[in-house]
Structure formats: C-alpha cells, structure tokens
Image (cartoon, rainbow, N blue to C red; front, top):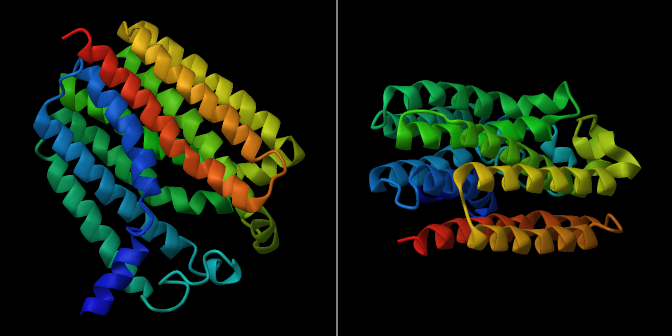
Length: 286
C-alpha cells in the first residue's frame, strides 16, 4: 500500500511542486485584487487547495496521454506510467478522484464559480492531447492555468470584471513564455517522436518571440495595475519581474537544456515578485 501511494504521489508530481506554484501565483494575484487586499479566507482555502488538486490531476492526465511517448524521452522515461509501475486504469481513476475532490470544494462557492469550474475541468482534461494537433499547446496550457483568474473573481465578487480578463490574458501570455522555455528542454526529443510545441514552431526565433511575449505580459500587467488602481509597490514588483525576465533571457541565450530548465524554474520568483507587490500595495493603504 505504501509503495502504491508513493507511485501515485510521483504520478501527481508532488515531489516537484513548481507546477503548483506557477498555477498558484496568478490565482493569488486575482484573489488579492478581487478582495482589495483582504480576500475571504474560505475562498483562499478553496482556491489554494483546488490549485494543488487540479495541478496534480493535470499531471496525471498528462502522463496518461503521453504514456506511449514518455518511454522514448530521457527526462520522462522513469515516470510511473511510462515505467509501468502504475497502470493506465489506475491513472484515470486517480484523475477522476482528484477532479471530484476539487469540484467538491468549488461547491462551497457561488453558482457563477461553479459554472466556470466546468470549463476549467474541460481545459485541464484536454490540454495534454493538444500537442498532437497543434504547435500551440503552451497557449492552451496558459488558458487552463489562467482560468483560475476569472473563477477567483467570481468567487470573491460574484462577477468577472474587465480587470479579471486583463489578468487572464497576462497569465496566458506568461504561461506561453515559460512553457516555451520548458519546451526548449525537450525540443530534440519532441522532434524525434513527433509531438508539437511552440519551441518547435518558433525554431531559431524562439528567444526573440519569448522576449516579445514577455513584453506583452508586462503591458497586460500595467493595464491590470491601472484598472485596479494599484500604486508604487505594485510597479516595483513589476520592475523586479522585468529583471527576472532579463535573467531568463540570459539563461536561454545558448539554448542549453539545463539552463532552459533553470529559466523555466525561475518563473516561480517572477510570480512571487508580482504577488509581493500586490500585497504590499494593499497593506500600505490599510
């Protein structure tokens, strides 16, 4: 039994929580802005727990979708499904259980949030299959990750205002940028096995296009700040994030897989710096 639980934890990537953080930061941005610095504690609990559950579910369904590809990729061949330590039926059952648990939490929220959550489940369940049909799975991942933003506003305020959609766009763009960095790590393997990504689509223009997307992220976040009436501490957080984006560009300059992975991981601090700016901005008003 203990071994099964360990394998399930590995399948959910609980040993690598970076995905939880990357999904959590825009959720927290949204909750703090929607709650004017004082979000409802129950809403925060539901969303933080839901983020952990849905990211875990996303990892499970992703590995289920890639179970025939992962054995051919050096970085993924030892994952529980790829290595045969977990059966496909077990993975599907685990995915359903995680989704049901997350939906049970959402039922504590209002009707609009519940309806929006149904879209979130569809996005999470279908994302892993996008790399077979489009070179833009990173954009789709951004939509799946960003969907927590309108949900958070709906739960906190009962509506989804303009600022929520601006923040959603910023999140989609940000995820596209950092997941393209992640795609650069596996680009050669992906080319061999025939799956698609923005890293493959962008080719030699990858760094330049990532830079343009990062610039678009900051434009969207400035618009968010203006729409939400945020002040100096928020923009200082954005300035820190600009420095981190420049550092990420430095890391990927030679497209070395290890440094591309470091650039991807560095986005945790990117998200944290923006959240710190939001929190401080509301604190100084109190």
